Structures are given as C-alpha cells and as structure tokens.
Figure 1: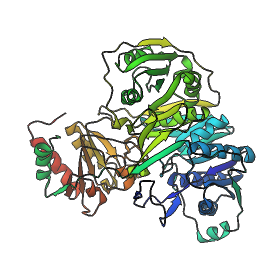
Figure 2: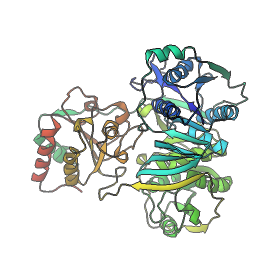
Figure 3: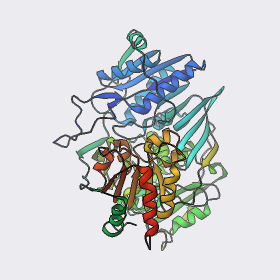
Length: 249
Length: 317
C-alpha cells in the first residue's frame, strides 16, 4: 500500500490570535507556525501503518506558501519517505485544495489518503470529504481507529452520539481525529536525515487548477468580550450567587 | 429560490438540531424544503411537516438508507440540487461529514458553521476556534452552508402542515459499508441542548472521580461535559468532549471543574450564559471567561457544592 498524507501549515495552536486593526484578517506576521495538529495524527498513523509492514511508501504533501516546506520537512522527519509542496500564494479555499490534491492523487496513485479532520485556522472541516467526492472514493471522517484489511479499511469514527464503525474499500480518504494516536516527536538524527529526503516543488498553475477564491471575505472581527466576572470566596457564596444573582439554579 | 435542508434523524425521531437548522434556513429564505432520507422514516417526515417554517417535505424512503452514509445521501441530494439556491444542514458530525461531499460535486465553495445569517449570500462564521469572526459572501450559484445549531433557536415543532412528497432513491454505494454504531444511552439531557452542563477536566485525575461530577449533574438535571484532556486520558467517552474539535454548547449555566481553559476548550463553551469555574490554580485561563470563579480544590468543593444544593428548597429543572 502507498499512503499520501496531506499536511497544512497553520498558526500554532498555543498562539493567542489577534485580529488586524483594519479587519482584513488575523495577524500572521512574526507568529509561530506549526503543523495543523490533527495532520500530525495523520502522519503518525501513516508511519505506524508502514512500520507494521502494511505500507511501502509514505508521501507527505502540503499546499501553501514557500514556507510550508517546513511542514513537509517535519513530516519527513517523523517518517514520511518523500515530500511534495504545491506552491500557492495567500489564502486558498478547501475546494481548491481538494482539486490540487486530486491532481496529486492521480499522479501518485496512493491507496490511502490521510489528513486531519479539520484545520484549526479556518475551522472548515471540508478538504477530505471534498477530495473523496472529486475522486468518487469512499470517505471515513473523524477516525479514532483504523484497521487495515486486505482490500479495505475498518474505521472507527467519533460521532456526536458515540462511536461508529464503517468499512471502506481502498482506495479511500480517511480524516483523522486527535485521538487516533499520539504523534511522536522527531528525533535529532531523523531531523538530520529528513534534510536529505527529496521535496518536489510544483505550482498550482502547473497542475492547471484554478485557485481563485469563491468566497469573499468581507471582514474579520474580534469576538464579543465577556464582561469580567468575580471570584467568590466559598462554595456557599457561589450557590447564593447562582440562586439569587444569576438566577440559574 | 428555495432552501433545501437535510434532516438528521434515526428513522424514528428527528434529531433536535434539525429544528435549529430549520430556523436558520428560514432566515435565509422562507421557502424551506426539508429532505428526509431514510428507511421507514414516514414518522420523521410527518413530524417535520408540522414545523410551521417548513413549506415542503421530501421523503426518500428506501432500505438502503437504514444507516446514514455520506456517499448515499450525497447522490440523492445532487439529483435534487438543481431546484435550489441553498443546501443547508447542521454543522455537527452529521452535517460536517456530508456537506463538503455535496459541495465539491456541485463545484461550490462551502461555508461552514455559520453563526449568523446576514443576507441570502452573506454569513458570519467563527474562525480560529472562535477567536475571530469572519463575515463572508458566497459568489457560487448554489450555496452550501452548514449551521452552528446552538447559534439559532429551534423552530417550533407544531402548527404547520407542509405537503409531504415522496422522492426517488439514488443508486446505493458499494464502496462504503456501515458496520455498527455504539451509542451511549443516557437519561440525561443531551449535551448540545442541556440547560445546565457540568464539565470535568484533567483535574478530575481519574474516571472514577467523575462520580463527583455525576452527583452534581444529577442534582441540576445537567448534561456532563469534558475537556479534551479528560477524554484523551480515558476518564470519559468522546461524546462528552466540549471544544473546537468536540461539541459547542451554549447552556444557561456551564460549570467547569478542574479545567484549565485552553483556547480550544473555550471555543466550545464561552458563549454560555453563566460560566462557573472551579479550579485550584488561581491563574488558570478559565477564570478569564468565568462569571463566578472559585479558587478551590475540587475534591473539597464538589461535595460541598452538592451539600449546598441539597439545602435549597427548589432547583430549576
């Protein structure tokens, strides 16, 4: 089996987001960037499947600016064999990303495409499902367990009511939940080795994909601030406040 | 033009968030049609036809729809899509799984998780775990939109009498097979719609200790929530997770116990009407959103809290 893993470079999950003064977006200059957290789970899972002898090659792909190369490089340090960077400038919508990934899939012919279920920047939760649709492949979203069978995968999905298990034929798209596994840290020797692994660079135009935005972003605003609360000194005071002031119990 | 809303149900009952999605849909356009795809789902179609905001129900009934699979639903929706200006559903695991598959086949850039309808083509949605709100305008011919259910009140469930029309099934998928669903049954109110939510975090230290949360939740007729840390640690199952990648809740009262308040957790609860935080770390970020903060060891505070609740003559249900 061959696995393609899609990774996205996003603002690090620990960074306090600031909205730009002109309301055109959020501040990204001089802000720490990292791999989108559930994409780390996707890479980890791919490498684990390979280590279990069920996959021969893991290819990491990212769609983004030049600097997204670092995100691909990190995937290589964790255990992906080679990387692809599809260069685009600025913000790109999930529909366009999925069209780009479709081209990459047609070229690479993987049996499985893994990615995080959602990117923590735009919170769209779309790309995996869209790619599955464009390829007419099965989709297993929000995976917390993947069992590789001969010509299919049994995937446990985290859904609102609990857990759901489905079986998808390969080739398939699986989007990963945070509980799928615990992503490893790259060791220093592996980081050094990753520097020698190849990263192929392509541009979206080379692939013939129209990446123009369909959605107009009119403005970005700060969320309404909650008014400051108070600290209570005791449980008794808390219950009194809830009963008599907030009137919620 | 009209709005096509995809109902979520289990063939017997309509899932409550469908009603929230219906109100959002009728803010987009009054001509709301609801699509029920199911097996022996006549009762579902009937109860939706009684929602006054609904103008028509399309019931696609076939044994192949016994269990929900995005692949199967998508084929039905695509066949009907030509008649609609908007296709909408809830932004929960049901709709998040489904809508992008539909949108991609229609070559539409989906708008996810809207919290406000500004006009037929312009919506507001949270980004970066709710740390910013974007106002976005769709320039696609058909708009595929998912709705954050807790941002819209549920539509009334009686008084209407919409026409129920039977629709055609599409070809069944052969690439995906449903195996099983492990639903966690509970007599408690559902987390997404409960008036009160009591949540535990890493500070609970074990699954066993969640019985302290349960006791308070019983008393307040509350749903039980959890932070991702508590779920990851195996204290409680995933269906309880509140946050950016879990559920979004907007109860009248949210009590966060032993939860530090990472921005990913706050994303799921900071719109709650009243927030209480109980944490022994006075610097914990959860206090920045709490209306009432109690700096205390939860293992002392929770039993005392229950005791004080027991002293009250009446408790709202």
